[in-house]
Image (cartoon, rainbow, N blue to C red; front, side, top):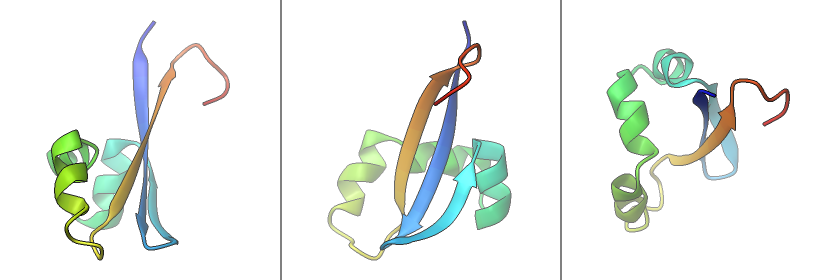
Length: 68
């Protein structure tokens, strides 16, 4: 089974972008690597010190599953 990721980005309570790393990179105007970094623990720790930064939620699911 192949594990896939979807991302959801919020600024405060407002959704900014939702989708795969490729889709979110186009919506936010950044690279795919930046999207993946936003989902990393390193970014999460830095974000705690900067409340106006984007908040990222990463959804992991298997390709064979119908639901996330």
